[in-house]
Image 1 (cartoon, rainbow, N blue to C red):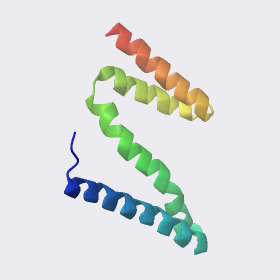
Image 2: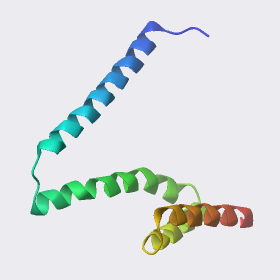
Image 3: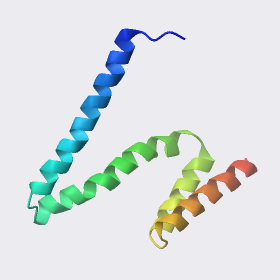
Image 4: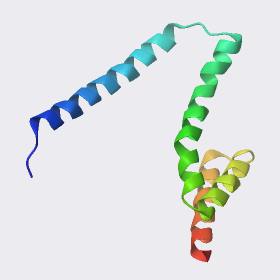
Length: 99
């Protein structure tokens, strides 16, 4: 296997930019005094990113994944995180076995 120098440079550059973006975000948000709507907006970012990552897969891969995602969402309203993950995994495994 040979490594193309341009590919390696692109990977290193992406890693550096990603790292700098994360570090900058950490330092910037640590200095902000957020209140009211701004705080609510910042608090909504992690769930919004999670949904943006999971929803396309859950809705385009098949009915077992879609149903499992819906059941997991319902479980998340009542159960702690580890139990919610376990429910989601068990439901998708069971539904895939049935299909």
